[in-house]
Image 1 (tube, each protein chain N blue to C red):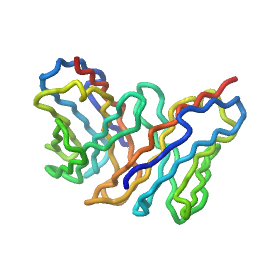
Image 2: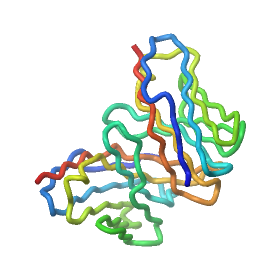
Image 3: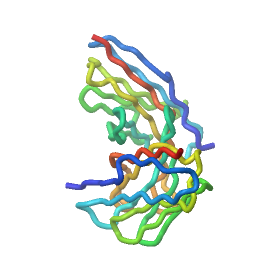
Length: 114
Length: 113
């Protein structure tokens, strides 16, 4: 099963609040889990990524929490700002034939209100 | 630094017409290259990937094909477009076989009418 399930589909957070987006996967062959941020009309930008041997990774206001046994991972955006308003995609990847194949979630539209 | 280019940025084509989208990467050698399609309000679907010149792997049976005539050039083509081919096409690259990070280009918005 190659699917990656992402929730919620949309999220509204007040400025300064914490945004939390969750993802779940089924295939235990996935071994790299990136998050991407996408603004309208633009290509996705790599935000932060984690490997399954680590339970948490933090970069600035962005933190990934990873639960290998539950096959779940989440993105936390601390002190959310209006500039964080974008669509966020989780992904899971594995090496196949020399290529890094990414399977994406369906995305979460985040709106940070003043 | 590395830069990825895609053109055209937008394209409107009639059903049954051919398609050619181009992607080029600067500032790196022997990258892995990827084509994705993003339908409106959906996630990204991997279409093709290439680990070297002339080496193409197809992920989804479809009306499209890909070619890699040069090390840093990746082309997405179709002989006859279908309405269902409309979408946002994204090219991505990664550093050969040593890196997991994929970096995306600006995309091409294709509308088939």
